[in-house]
Length: 182
Ligand code: HEM
Ligand code: HEM
Image (cartoon, rainbow, N blue to C red; front, side, top):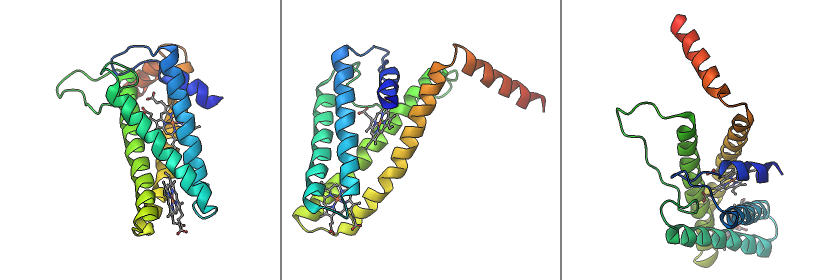
C-alpha cells in the first residue's frame, strides 16, 4: 500500500513537470510490481530452485526490455521517458527542493536500472555460455544495498510531501540561520 501511494505521489511530475495520465501511472505501477516481484523471487531462488531462478531472472530481463523500449519510444517530456542525468548549470541560483528531489530520483532510477540489468545479464551469460558465475553472484549481492537506499529515499520523499507546504523550506532556513550564528 505504502509503495502504491509513494509511486502515485512521487511520479506525479515528469522532468518537464507534466503530470502522468492514468494509463501512464498504471503502466509504471504494473511495471514496478513486475520488476520488483521478479527480482525478489530471483534473489531468493539463487541458491534454491534453479528452474524458478531462471524463470524469474528472465522475467526481470523482460521487464527491463519493456522499460527500455517504452522509454525510447516515449517523447522527451513524457513521464515514461528514460531518466535524464542533467545537472543544473554552474553559477545558477541553487535549485529548489523539488528540483533536487527530481534529480536524486533520476540518478537513483538510472543506477538501479543499470545495476539490475548487469546482474540479470551476467546470470544469462553464466547460464547460456558458462561464464564465471562469481561475477553474477557479486552483482546480484550488491543490488539489495542500492534497493535499500532507493526505498529509504522513496519513503523520505513521501513523508516530506505529506508535511504542510513550506515546512521543509522553514526547517532548512532555521538550520542555515543557526549555522550562520554559531
Ligand atoms: C517498498 C519498496 C519500494 C518503494 C516504496 C518504491 C518506490 C518507488 C518510487 C516512488 C519510484 C518512482 C521514483 C520517481 O519518482 O522517479 C520508484 C522507481 C523505481 N523503482 Fe522502486 N520502490 C520499491 C521497491 C523497489 C524494488 C525492490 C526495486 C527493484 C528490484 C525497485 C526498482 C525501481 C526502479 C528501477 C525504478 C525506476 C523506474 C524508472 O524510472 O524507470 N523499487 N520506486
Ligand atoms: C536480477 C536478477 C537475478 C538475481 C538477483 C540473481 C541472483 C542470483 C543469486 C543470489 C545466485 C546465487 C549465487 C550463489 O550463491 O551461488 C545466482 C546464481 C545463478 N544465477 Fe542468478 N540472478 C538473477 C538472474 C539470473 C538469470 C536471468 C539467469 C539465467 C537465465 C541466472 C542464472 C544463474 C546461474 C546459472 C547461477 C549459478 C547457479 C549455481 O551455481 O548453482 N540468474 N543468481
